[in-house]
Image 1 (cartoon, rainbow, N blue to C red):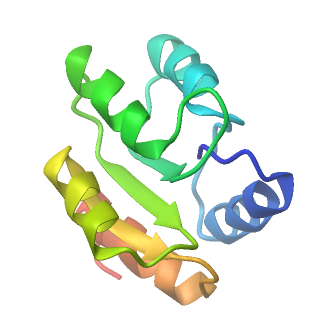
Image 2 (cartoon, helix red, strand yellow):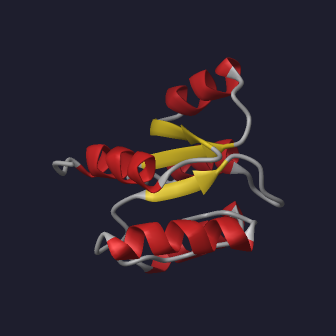
Image 3 (spheres, one colour):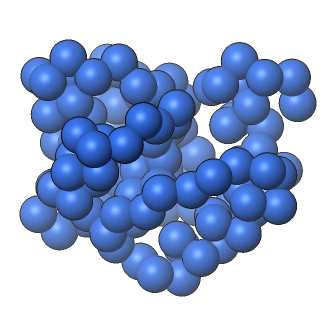
Length: 116
């Protein structure tokens, strides 16, 4: 998961670990690219707005590097244009903040092809 807000990372970490997922964390898109280059990852959950490299920029860089890992984008902003850009860049889905654990797990299961 990629988010510059430590509290958001803690919340997502707890939701996902309780459901049995192993989690790798990064505080921005630049660090996420380093993690992705060194570790096998099944899904990236990235915040929209982060310093150095935000969610859309991360999607672009992953595409340029030929990474085909599904990406779920999270944002506190409900701008339809942004969501369209994210999906156009290859995001598999998006999630609005604030969110409930059930919402996160439903989208993660869908992105990973698991039954929820």
